Length: 638
Image 1: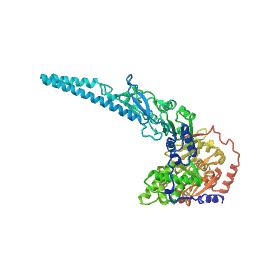
Image 2: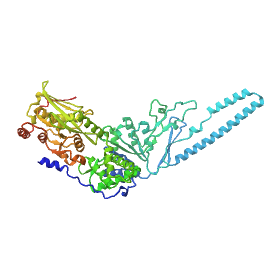
Image 3: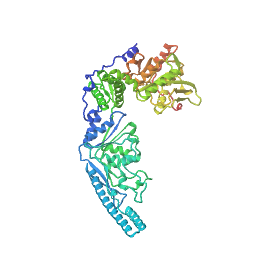
Image 4: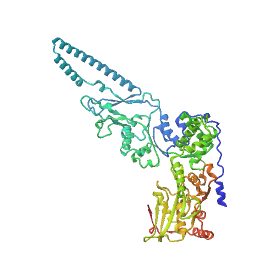
């Protein structure tokens, strides 16, 4: 009775969304980027401080949480400084060591234009003198009737002057970095740049001699670190840079200048090395959590010692103030897109409901705004396709079906095919078979059938054999499950082999959210007690049998409902995180559980139920001790 009451409570109407605006066109969009960032108050505060003091920043968080937007905002906030143009001149003493000079912004183009004009004058004067000389030779040949000698003399003089006279255009400096039209500090996105694009390069010269070579200084190309001089250099996925590039980046950060040389050892540009080129930039490094492991330790130390590290929030509290911010985000997306109609009140409320659902946390709104922006644009496209003046709630609901992720589409296809081939069973009872639930990607769920069988031990001691491409955490969860089997079966499992199979896990299994499913399947196999197949379950398990919270419960429950499963068991700690769509609420009953004993009571169907429940109560009251001699049991993943 208590379980039915709790299940009914999970389907209570959620807190209504109240939007004061009638239309997103009424929302004022702030002009500055930093004021358009929502839900990242700590990161915004850090960026403001870092901009004022010119500090480096590393931002770590999930994709789509606003890292690149904050980096662009920092370029707007940097204190106004006198921008500079960077010129590279030929070196008459050593052609492989071009000279670098800086001038105020805008002067670089003027200097280059003046040198080009001077070179053109010299070339015109030389060509005029050459033409007069040729006319004189040809005239003399006509007078003396020495035609052949005149032609030979003209050709000789032409070749001599062609290769002996200096090339004025080779002395014209090259404008390496131009900031003549820059009103704010430059923002350079160097994400995914190779060494040459990041650090600068010198182009290869295929001729190199014979008067056809290109001057060394003219082959020099600025890198992202030089173009971001006195501005912001943004590098996302910082761990994808090679160690060599990270080391050079560290040198540039420390010195504030970095010479340009050819990045390929087989190129003639490798022989050229300029004087140090200024690169006093503010670096914003970004990435996911795994980016920290791939970073050069000295580079991260430099950022920590001379800047800030920020973790980006993935959700924010669902308060009236934050809902107003989310409405402003909708207006920003509509304005930035420029091709979709504004959203009416119903559409904005539906977007906020979806933000609640995607947060995977009760009382929160997601901050993975890139995905939400995609939904907004698809809804707007549908409205425009229908010729509507505004985007309505119906357009948003239709967009949710259209703008599904690949993982969600694959999950639906897998559920359909598994039902067709009876891989997923949702009726009757089976021994040693449980419908577990899993997450695919970040916004979809799937049914994960798990089977268990017990056989006499083939060796001196029993073995737990788990197959299905289990990864590290999943393998460890199997060991934790094996630690409580003896307690809830009363049998010595050292004399048996336990086989556990995850069905259809071609992409592998990671995480421990299938722990209660594995424990139920194994106990069912050991005791030969059938398991209800209309039940799906998810939850981690402690070695003492406590059911621990897991992620993605909303998507898992929706996947179970689509598969035809009628009841879902979830950790009680996750009950507040359930935000399934309205169309699924009548299709499934949600029951929260605290302990593996609760799971077994609901999922198993023994012949003598009263005797089974008494046994469970007796086993659960037994103090937890060393139930398992871990030296006698091994877990063998396949």
